[in-house]
Length: 133
Image (cartoon, rainbow, N blue to C red; front, side, top):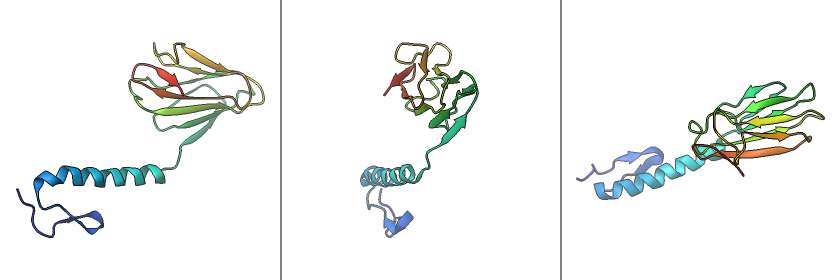
């Protein structure tokens, strides 16, 4: 199959002349677009002072337990496969406990307590649980 001469896609880059070359061409182009999107994306940060469940749109949760201890619950690992979340205890006092949803575990434990100001944990889902990075 031959593509029409002069066919172009975004940024006026000509498509390859043969269908066999198209997958490699599109792979390179999509990789460029993907990198640009990741570089331009603003990191989602949320501040909380009470029990909270992390959403798939969150990346950093700044938790202040000065008024009393509470839990920050991670989403189900199967729904967040590959996602990375960071939870930071920013309160001068109080314990923030990071909790896994359902039967998920965080490095083998159901919870990860943080009692020290500025203590933080970064976790990544592997589909059935969470790894601490």
